[in-house]
Amino acid sequence: MIDQKNSYFWQIIEEFNKLMKSAIQGPNCTDSAICKGECCSIKIDIPKVLAKEYIKRGYAEKSDFTRSNIFSFQLRFNEDSGKCFLFNKDLNGCSVHKSGIKPPQCWIYPTDFSNPSKNEISCKKLSGWEIIDYQRAKKAENLLKQYVFLCQVEAKKEAKGISQRLGNLVDGISNKKIELLQEKLRNIAPRNLGGFIDRWDHLDLLSAEGLSLQMKKFCVKHNSKCHYLVDDFINCDMICNEIAFKLVEFLQSNLYTYIKMEGPDVEGHYPLYKLLNYKIFNS
Image (cartoon, rainbow, N blue to C red; front, side, top):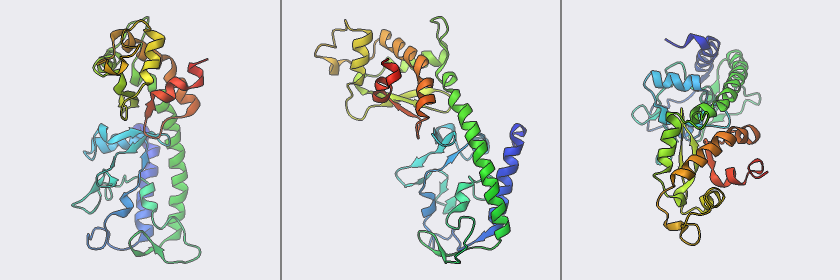
């Protein structure tokens, strides 16, 4: 059963699915000889309430979603196949197409909501798409505006939840989330830390591309007596306890302010070079 706390949201998305399903028609996309799922090769953002429903129904896991700067989450994109993770090779299409809760944005391509010039509508591979009920398509367009508004409201609330995902440091006492993050920090070489990733319910480490000297700046400021800092930083094999604690403290004090000022990252990535160089951290 769908979460009743968000009944208005579900009313919108289910009605949108019904309207668009009956308002457009086109080629048989499930025939692999006709279509190769080109329209699934785009990155789609969805709200958390929809992501939770995909998990509940077995379509997805928490790891299939990354934080976004548009709505709460972005669907995981399979870089190897070049398609959204919901693309099902056996179906030759979207796993949630017939579920009644398909992401609204995925219904729009290639028809949009109108065709005033009466031109032939084509997708990347095929032509022959048409809008067969403009009245239903118009209703769907109005519903999409409401959907976007609800998603944006939710996304703002989710951005504020960064402190909970990081964990609370009260009077110098950490909780389990902070302790796990500190443990991860103590098991990575400072040269390999590129930043942090905002996951579903916790923060994780972002690996550096190649070798990074960003942590050297932080170490110089907070542990200047470390013998690795003079000329042997690259050979330091793990972040020390003192720096792990200071890093988490730094995030606790500044990450939400950064997000509030700059906005969430498109994939929930917060590289050190942005965090450490941001003006409010150096004021």
